Structures are given as C-alpha cells and as structure tokens.
Amino acid sequence: MKKDIYVTRSSMPTYEEYCEAIKPLWESRWLTNMGQYHQELEQKLKEYLEVPEVSLTVNGHMALELAIQSFGFSEGSEVITTPFTFISTTHAIVRNRLQPVFCDVKESDGTIDETKIEELITPKTVAILPVHVYGHICNVEAIQQIADKYGLKVIYDAAHAFGEKYNGVGVANFGDASIFSFHATKVFNTIEGGAVCSKNHEIYEKLYNLKNFGIRGEELVASVGANAKMNEFCAIMGLLNLKHLSESITDRKRVHEEYCGALTGVNGIKVFDMEDCSITRNYAYFPILIDENYSLSRDELYNKLAENGIHVRKYFYPATADQACFKNLYKNVELNYARELVKKVLVLPIYEGMSQEDISRVIDTIIQ
Ligand SMILES: *Cc1c(COP(=O)(O)O)cnc(C)c1O
Image (cartoon, rainbow, N blue to C red; front, side):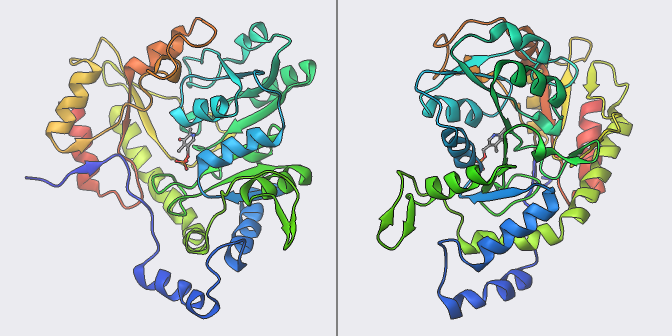
C-alpha cells in the first residue's frame, strides 16, 4: 500500500533550529503578552508585506472578526461578500451581528464579481468583504472605486494571498484592512496565527485593545476586548518559517508547473489561467475544475483519487450561503457562477517538498 498524499503538508524549520530558537524562553519565562518575538515578527512582517501596520493574532479567523469589529459598524448593517470561500469569512460577519449580502463570483477566477456589487448596495451597506480566493487577486481598483463612491469600508480576507503582490504592490495595501491566516495548512504558518494589516495606526491601536482585553496599563482597562494574542512559541515558528519562505514558494512553483504542464488541455479539466503577470504569486493552492467532458464526475474523481490514497479537497463546497447554518437566512441573490464553481472544483495536493513520484501519482490518476 502506497503512502497517503494529503492536500497540504506544513512547512517547518528543522527540529534543531526550532529548539535552538525557543531556548531563550526558558530564561525569560516570557511566553506571551506581546513579548520580544511577537514584536519582532510584527516588524519582520511589515517589511516582508510592505505594509505600514501589522497586528498579530491568535489565528486568521480572530484577525478577521476583530478587523471587522474595529470599524464599529452598527448592528444589523450589511456587508457585501463572496459565498465562494472558507466558512470563516461568513462567520466573522455574522458573529459581528452584521448581515452578509452574498454577491456572485467571476467564472474566470472565482473572486467576487465587481460588476454585481453596486446593485446590492442599500442604505444599510457599510462594507465590502471580498476574498482573494486561491491567491487570485480581486479587482481591487474597481472595488475601491465603488467603496469611495458610496463611502464603504473594504476589508479583504487575504488568507490565501500571503506575500503576493499586484503590480509590485503588497496585496495587503489594498482596502482599509486585510487579514492573513497563519494556520498550519497555509503557505506561511505560525502553527496557529493570523494578522490584520492596515495603513492606519488607529486600527492597529484598536486591534491592540481588542486582542488584549482593552488593557492599557496596570490599572487601566480602556475598552472592552477579547483575548486573541499570538504567543511567543508561535511567533518564533513564524520567524523561522519566514526565513525559509522564498525557497518554500519556489518549490511550490515547481509542483504548480508540473501540474500545469500535465493537466492543461486534458479533456474536461480546467486549470485557472495564471498567465496574468501583474500578480506575484505564492502557489498556495492548485484548484482544477471538472466539467461534463471529463470521463468521471467531480465526486467520482474525488473518490477515485481517495481510493488511491490521494486526498484532495472540495474547497469550497457548498457555497457558504448554502451551508446548513446560513441557508435561506439572508437576502436571496442569484449566485449562478458560485454555485457552478463549487460543484466543479477540486484542490490538488501542493506543498513544499512534494516528491516527483507523488506529483506523478496525482497526475497519472487524473489522466488515466
Ligand atoms: C484559513 C482561512 C481563514 C481562517 O483562518 P484560521 O487561521 O484557520 O482561523 C479565513 N478565511 C479563509 C479564506 C481561509 O482560508
């Protein structure tokens, strides 16, 4: 029996490297509460992402929840968002007592269809929350134009787009805030972790309060806040993974190119067009779309791969608007392309260090 291949595998420093790096914590006994490594990682990420403000959090979901909260929208306000995403995006809106208004996505890349946003705006709309899904960058210019015209905030869920650039500009510079996830399964990980990026120091300060109980002094609690800080062990993991990130991305690119070469042109399989050279990519995911010209249905291929020990994922099925917890609760909008995409998509295994043999096994199983 051949070994199983999973959709991803966490990038890690060597065991020795990590052990060496965490040693000082046994001296200082300073394990969390915005310690030295938390500060250092915020600084390094500001440089890497070329963004003015980075606030680290315990995970990507809390980054998004608190980023939304930092704008202080009034309860019941509407947020225009995409249903073609991980459930976290929609949860973060709803848990802020806001109403998600789902907007359809583009067939070309799965990001929010900017031409359909304006018709969804009402007097209750306060923000647009798009997702750079699979690292495909949204039409940031058009979205900003709409936001400016109607006085809306733009918050990007950039969980898939860590380190990407659009026309040479770090992706977190677009909109009023962007969040990243540093979950173990993401391109860059801190085991669990996340960050909110913004251009505005006021947002950074608000997040500082929101992630640490609003504590501003030994006897001063300035505002109501949660606990969503990143600890020092995670920050150190991040500092080490960041050092190796460019090699890691280069290696993912190798896998990406192998897949592209072998699968482009296969009857019934669509590979997203990645020719757009305005985007510097991170090769986080390799989604393919299976249509009726393929010999098997999407689910049959999923099962066939699983029988061969290859565990691909239906990221993201069903659309979040159609999940049990949200179905029929919100404004009924036509989501034709989103509902098409979720039925066709499979995300193939891609990670640093994926062997040639494993890549071939995936390709051969699909082509056979
Ligand atoms: C991973 C992910 C999140 C949540 O991040 P966590 O770090 O797992 O909390 C949010 N949105 C998207 C699109 C994601 O892929």
